[in-house]
Image (cartoon, rainbow, N blue to C red; front, side, top):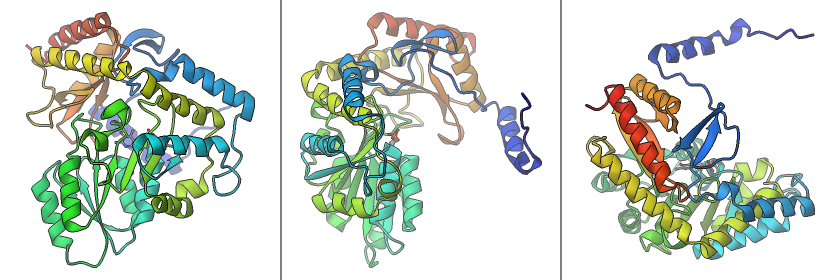
Length: 405
Ligand SMILES: *Cc1c(COP(=O)(O)O)cnc(C)c1O
């Protein structure tokens, strides 16, 4: 029997919407990685220079992390068997959390299955419908979803506009509800840094809870990759720090750092913690090894920033719009090349791929209409030769498509 069950009319609206994406030129297929996530690897059978991964420090394939995962699997098996609150808290889970708390210089830490669930689970549980969330307009989707789930009233300030943020805080200052001021540490589509220090001043002035999502800052900003709070010297001023284990740390997961009571509260109320199974031992052991590496191989972070400065500088010299005019200026290893038109962006990305460079096209609704872009991300492991080859390809393909003169 090889009959395939075809779609029934009940889902026709999905097909209609997909057809609309195809008409607009922004429909995509998933690119499939055939080997290891690395600066040069094979997608869909084609060898390319990879400018698309969040593997900032090259840890996804680090021998020490592989070894840690294998050892933990041999010792403890492949699964935790339950959610954390029932029977799925393993000793190794507690050890990782203690390690992260020490690293971040906070009282306590809790690890979630992903950065997404860390944000959504935290924002939705620490506030209720009488409260207010004051949020940067470019904050990550997981913050937005958490805010909606909390049923708190959401006030959105223009990107990094401190006067606007203050105006919103003033507006609700007389209201009885709690206020949460929230920003990304590094904005994932533009690569600019959130003004954590200035937001801390506002949070102090208006008695707001201060929260930072450091997904792209973990392992990238601050001493040994301690994140944006360390970068700005704001220790003790941020009530809730979220980080990810899925990007620079090289594996999977998210964490929340803060006071002992914040963490204890999340144990009791954060729904992804309560209702979704904890990490397998291999993931947890991998993350432990990664935090050791942040301390023992800090030169990876230095190399990441060296590559970033070089690549960003060259892109600028070539005359690409790398932000700063109509969009924020990147300050981190994420460098967007702003194209504007969605279809043109997707065509550029595809032509780059055919020419041996993997750089993702990102269009509406992930970024605003008219701000479509190619997003490039540096890692510590790219060699100068690879970067030069990628730059040469970007130059050649963009001219061919008439994106630059
Ligand atoms: C990637 C990302 C997340 C989600 O992290 P995952 O661990 O991949 O779920 C959260 N916030 C921001 C800003 C991100 O870029």
